[in-house]
Image (cartoon, rainbow, N blue to C red; front, side, top):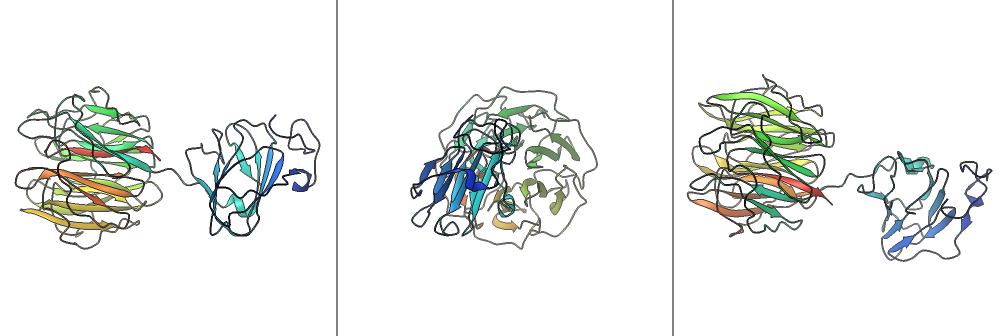
Length: 421
């Protein structure tokens, strides 16, 4: 039992107190930026000068109760953040962000069990849903210069690209990559110097690439990959000797399922990314074998790809795409018959906007990934020569100037986000 035992029928060992007044109320008003609280107590939290992180007990029993009160009605200006200290909060683990941001709010929580953890009793508090943690880091992987490569480059939460790491599975190019399992990544398919492959490589949440796994659907190159359903991934489309419209779903443990056919117009060298707040994704652009494409296909939270939608900016292939701003997507660069530096922003409803020009050096066969919670990074590609340029994209979709010299210059690589904040 943690804290002070009070008269409370919610406890296995006591009888009931009719209200929170039955708790032991602290004589000291919390004013600091951090505080650790105990079960059986009520606290006054004054955030006039700063945000305060409240750390809950590291162990609890059913019926343990804690009350927090906005002493100065300032939580709307300086919020409180709940650190559940290894226990669940409303059924979510403590990697989730729990914040209370309403002036005059009170928070009355009771511990239920290991599954749901701490649960708020107050109606106005229950409506405040925890916010899922966001992807902080990215990695670029594989690609080609004169021959296929197997190197990766990690990207930190500030968008800084690290030195090459070599020897991460079979060298190949024109593969796909996506985040899965909330905080890990997967590379799959590709061209291993004129041999199409169906292998995949899982990436841990610390950015370590694992050995090849073979036999994951039809061997092909030029696939697109994206997260969907919050913690799963899918690969779709590609080239097997001709363009295909296959898709393969990936579980939240990184297992790739069998081929599913008939998912829109067959094409390759398109791009995909998640959008919205309900686990959706979209694929867009590419090459049909006879023409550059501006098609898009929306994907629902169950991984079902919808019919083609046409006319979403300049038709092109070999561009990059990544989520930004928490729920939107940016497409940029590519090949429309010549290299371009166009970008197209996609809102949280999956609607792609008109072209915007002038976003760094024009190039094709580059890639992009999310980083830093709500930003994106574009990198590498073919600008007329093999490139190691990167361009950061902020959480408003604004792409910054070129940054040079970030690892081995190459093109036809892939990228994905990993590791939660």
